[in-house]
Amino acid sequence: MPTIEKLNPDVPLYARTGINLASAGLGARVENATNDFFAPAARMLDDAPPIFIPGKFDEHGKWMDGWESQRRRDGGHDWATVKLAAAGRVLGFDIDTAHFTGNYAPAARVEAAYAPEGVTEETKWADILPHRPLGPDGHHFFRCENYESWTHLRLHIYPDGGVARFRVFGVPELDDTTGGQRIDLCAALNGGRILAFSDAHYGDYNRLLAPGRGRDMGDGWETRRRREPGYDWAVIALGARGKVEELLVDTAHFKGNYPDRCSMQAADLTSFGDGLTDALVTDSMFWKTLLPEVKLGPDAEHRFAGELEEMGPVTHVRFNILPDGGVSRLRIFGRPVRS
Image (tube, rainbow, N blue to C red; front, side, top):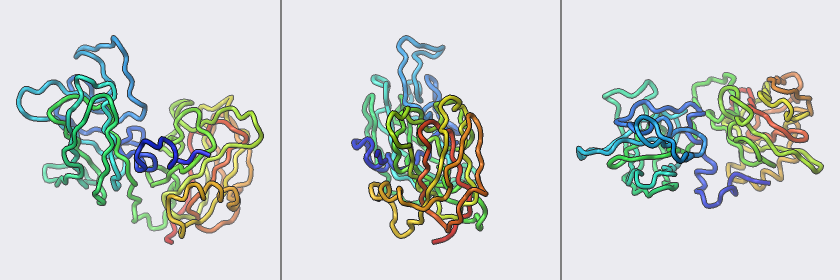
């Protein structure tokens, strides 16, 4: 039973459990950069791991999968402004210089601003990561000790060079002004997180909670073909405790490999807090049924409301797919309820 806390033990816990607020797939974007002559700054927000293509050149030189500025001769340094996918508290960073060897940025610094209406000349910036050295062709994980909420970051590189990926792991700020309005309780941008799963052989399981519909069959959660009894599942922490009113299970692009059926269990674990993933996985098998087994079809959105069992507010769900297969997106619509 893979739990997110146990996956990739060499990676800091915040990078395994936090949401990448600088994910282009979640809506983050580069607003400006001082220079991106060799490779556009927007490329460093791509969700896919960086690649290297030998012999690939464009009109500016060697094609690189990331942000690369030209060589500076004026004594200054380069920077890029990133609008995060959602306002949130930053837990830590991964400044990845993969494939940048003789052209990596030797040092970096990060500033942050809270500017929900957009950055202006009057915007105040705060240092949330002081100067840190970087090396060639590797991950550089740095913890953030600041606990405020931010909408924009400014990545400074000294003096110039390349960064393959800039990842900002954190916790989205759920708007407190919803006033009990219906939201997607499990959306990544609302703080929903996958804590554990039975299998995630194909695709990217994090995209299950991403906005929009899947682009293709790789843009979602897909398990291997099950050759033994049982079924596949994922345990999800909701972004807010809430009363579930409707579920949407989208099998977009999954045609010969969609699950035959699905069901959902749920529990209110307000008093248990976070991080008990081992206990949660075991306990989740005995949670109350929220959605009994229902049929699914290929490449379609499936909505369930009248099928839901009556249940109070919940904080966690176990999404079961029977026996295996792929789901592009999951939506859990409901109204936040204060603990």
